[in-house]
Image (cartoon, rainbow, N blue to C red; front, side, top):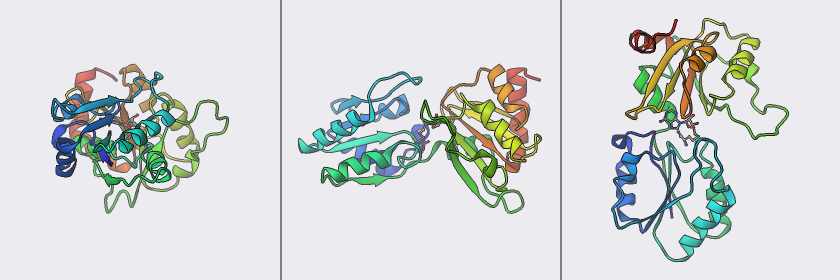
Length: 250
Ligand code: SAH
């Protein structure tokens, strides 16, 4: 069993190891975040099991995915569990690994290019910079439905002086940016949204913390997208001019 990161979308960002394992697998278990171009690299005769959910729609509960992995491994098959980006960044890879460990199934982990890295590279944003950011934080903007208190202390993150990369943040972007502002992060702090980074349908918008939620909504930005907030985003200026023209937003 191999838990493998597929990267953000561009097949060229797949690791050599991931490609080698995909070509040797008996069965590949994947979800919707794995791009078509990557699935096309799986040999035609290899069995594929889709366990994804699209657009938040229900498909396969996590415990079913875990049972499927355990079942397939117990059949003696060479299984690749393929996940978008890196398997250990918001991909529930940790939970799958725990389930496999509990079942006594050994599993190797192959890291992938997480989508914040793909997004930053495409936008020309260095996530750290000697003058501008001494650290970088990966945050989730999506929390369990029904939770009353947010587990993410956004106001505290406003004070870190680090670059913030928000995954799954599109639905809650107004509340997220509002809480960062309330925590003291300046409204002029540069912020960018990169949708479908490294794919043919990539879209990029560079703005500021104070304006990005409204503009992303007006511009029709949707998941999957990464929001990057911090002074380093100011270095993406050249691309900003291009996308401003493309979207004709203020
Ligand atoms: N394990 C993945 C993240 C899974 S959580 C990784 O390391 O990238 C799903 C979220 O990842 C999406 O809601 C979105 O925020 C982000 N994401 C995944 N692919 C993306 C892409 N190509 N462009 C921008 N964001 C992406």
